[in-house]
Structures are given as structure tokens and as C-alpha cells.
Image 1: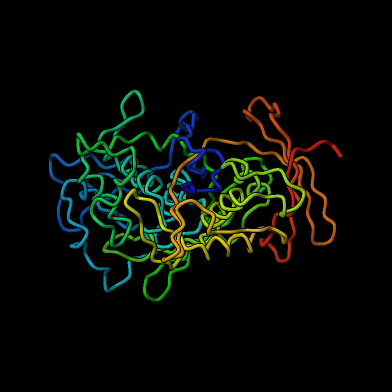
Image 2 (image 1 turned 90 degrees about the horizontal axis):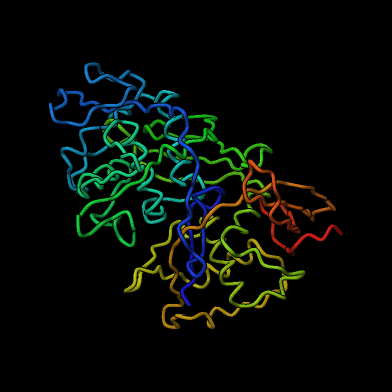
Length: 413
């Protein structure tokens, strides 16, 4: 068995996780927002755009220079794509703190791509689908790409990957295309879909602090889908790179309990049990994999892949995940997982995406450190028709550090 993981867990509508054994690409069928705020257009500080270069976005005219407080993001990168190894080093002098408009576009791009949904550090912990969607969001904003009447755009692989390399330091050539269905090998191109249509304005910039070395610490929130305040709060780190910034890492500093339960429901690890001892080894494995991904437990690890592209995950990381998010009493045997390698102590893990759930909190009861939630799930939030209702019993030792004690269908008792 290959245990599946997914990325962007807290984006309950579309960027959610799904285990590979129950995976399938979910469709986000939302209508495009009437207008998406434009990101600052890129411009070269020394040269005028070539006549055949893609047009810049409405946020800046090709005839004007960028504002002093807005980092220029090179729109010409798609025309003059350079290998990752030759990417320019960070400027000796730190760029000015970006404008609120640019930062607002940045956090919306993170949400639309699903990168706002989990903690990560470096490209190895960023989902390929998320990075591609983030990249295409900015290309759309800057006028470097236009979708057709069906919401698609085909871009040469070299051009698209050069744009992605603007945002991630050390991105290996060809890494983005591995196991990703946007990449079309027969055309050596990416068939991208409209990312701007996912922009629903759920993100809010809280704070931006610049360190002496130019590094930015950006704090932002993501609204909950069920309308009860923030779903999560993230702290994003950006490093200066030329006239722009690299995505360095992100830490989730707050996560709402209902959205946590809804993500668990979405990815297929929302099991029925009154005590953790009732969970099977397979269920424990799947649950652990989801926790590893949603809590970013692979940060700082150098993970290898097998011949089929699956990540070889150390079993101690799975054990850590269970101890972090599940109550006591379970019996977990990692050696019984299919593909377990005794010599390396690893199991193969693959990646995937899920569909959509729309949660709504019905009630909550707190008894000491035990919180009981009753959550309604809607097939369509516009219809307000409840598809199912479940309960969750959580133990809260510290704020944000809860463990699952029980879950199942809600019977009204």
C-alpha cells in the first residue's frame, strides 16, 4: 500500500489534501471574482520592454517605473528565461518594504494556490500543484498569460519554469513537471487553468516586518468558510532576491478546530471510533500521514524518493504525528505497512488532491480540557442543505494543540 498525502489542507474548498488511495482531483466550480486586485507589474530598472514582450498588467504602465516601495517582479523572465543556477544573488542593499497592494496580491496568490493551507520550508516541502498555481496567478496578474474561453492557457515549459524559479531559490530544472498533469510532455508545455477565479478575498494582511538583512516576516489570516472568524493565521518568510523576493517558508501559528476537523473529513481520515484503540493499523497510518502533512512535520528533513516518485518517509515521523494529534490507547505497527523498508526504516508515500466540503459549526461543549464539536457538512453552502452531521471529541492541552479522542455520526445525544 502506498499511503497518500495531500497539500494545502486548510483550504477546505479546493486546495485540500486527499490520500492517494481515495484521491481524485477536485474541481473548484466557483465563478470568477468580478475583479481581482492587480499585482504590481514587473519592469526592468535599466531597459525598456522589448516590442514582443508580453504586456504588463494594469497595475503599472510599461511607460512608467515601479514605485519606490513596490518590489519589481521581472515580467521579462518568461522571455529571457535563465537557468536556475544563474539566478542573480540577493542585492547587497535590501529592497524597500513592499506596498500593501503587492503584499495583498501575495497572500491572495497563496490562498488561490493552496500554499496558505500548511507549514512549509523550501521547495521540497511545497506541493508542485500549489507552486504551479501560485506561479500562474502572478503571470495572470502581470499580463504574461491569458486564458482562453474555456479557462485554459498553454505555456512553453521553459518559460513557465523560469517564472516559478523567480519565487523559489534553488528550484531544480524539471522538478515542477514531475508527476504533475499540467505538464504535457508531447508538447513540452504546461496547460494551466484559470487561477484568478479562485480569488474570493478570504485573506487579510495583518503585519509585515523587515529584518536588518532585508528578510520580510509577513503575518496574514485566512477566513473560515463557515463564517466564524479566521480559519488560520500564518507567518510567511520572504528573502530579498534581486528586485523581488524568494518564498523561504511559512509557519501556521493558529488553526480553527472546525476547519481542522473538516479537513480531516475531506481527505478521508474522518473515522468512526469511541476510543483510539478501535482504529486499525491502516487507519492509523493514513491519519498519521495527514497529520505529517498538515502540521509540516517534514520540515528540515532531507527525504528521498523511490523509482515511482513516492516520498520515502521515516516511520518515526508517523509515530510523532500520532503522538501529537491522537489520544492514547492506539496500537500502531509501522512494520506492517506495505512497502516498509527495514533497512532504512521508511515507507513510500505519494501525493494527491481532494474535492470540497463546506462545514458549519452546530454546537460546542467544553468540559475541562475536553471539547466536543458538532459539525454540519453542506453539499452546497448556497442551498444550506445539510448532507451529514458528525461529532468530534478533542483534548486541548495547550491552545492550538488538540488531540482527537473520538469521532462519528451525530445522533443528537
